[in-house]
Image 1 (cartoon, rainbow, N blue to C red):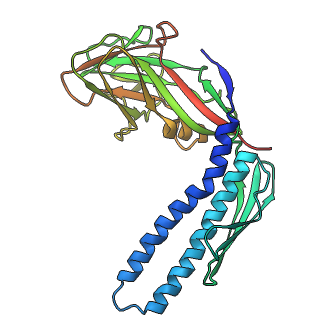
Image 2 (image 1 turned 30 degrees about the vertical axis):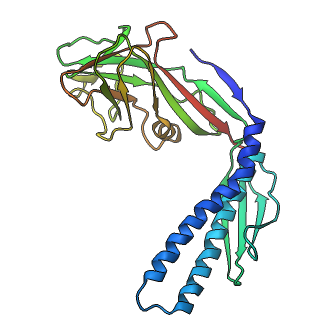
Image 3 (image 1 turned 135 degrees about the vertical axis):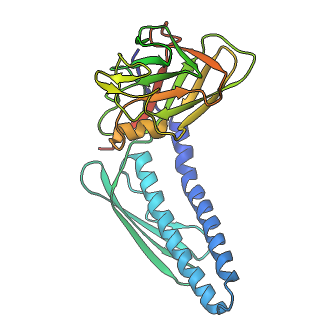
Length: 306
């Protein structure tokens, strides 16, 4: 169930390269406008002082945009420095200096000068860069595990071809991240589930991060041997949600969760699916079902630049 393919799109990369600075500056100007509005509303402030502060902040924001642009260009080109100077608006200049450091890292320094003469320099060092111009995608395999736990059952259901959700049953799914290279950054992680059957009503399915390690023997009252729980231990925060009705496939965005697993900021204990509204039920196919129906976690990532 594991696959790998290189998804490189030079046209899209060039478009991102050409548009990144415009996007950055557009966001920058919006922030600057908000800051200026707030300063001009300050009662009793001297107009000259307001203008000076506005200009100083403009230079600082431009320098910050320059560092962001330097990082982005180097991730698209994997270490080739951007042009040393930009003219963003009449009379305003932005100089960006990029130097290579340790493997996979650069230092970016940006100096911005406004038309009124305010200057600001910002340096970020080190910055780890990833090859965003060349992404890869994999359907995670390895230690895949899924089951459902039911309050009325005392035996594990990990060999069923379905994952049953109801007012008294939740589904558990788990993948490891070993298929993702160690020198990568996760760009997206999408979980695909296929419903077994359909319904005349729409049912909301919520996904949560599991906080206790479990295994194939999990039941409603037991996470694993000698470790108990009650319907699963999970973070109450809903990480993803989907409305289910027709017999179709459904996709949930788990980028934040998979990134946390991969980076080690959260233990990789899997996820729990549950129905927040009583009196409903949903059945998805499990990993014991045919390949085209089983749950799949597709991750897109980029490796670090040389």
